[in-house]
Image (tube, rainbow, N blue to C red; front, side, top):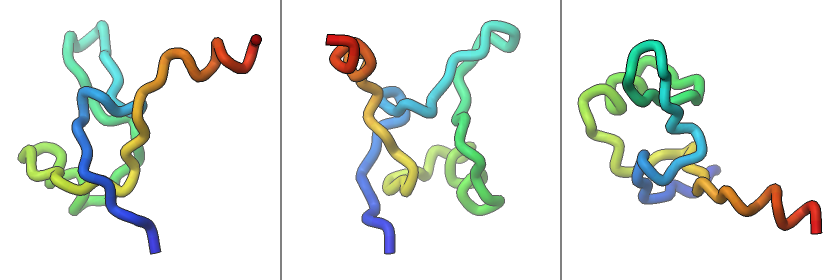
Length: 62
């Protein structure tokens, strides 16, 4: 059983900006119910939330 995390899409690693459409989208493969919740803004608990950490890769190089 996955632990549900209270999430904020703007801070998520899967929240990607698309230059072509000039908008953000969730890059995770969501099922029908999850996509409905995402589109309607009812995403209080997201199973896939990963905090965007830009420094994670830099730390591995040190």
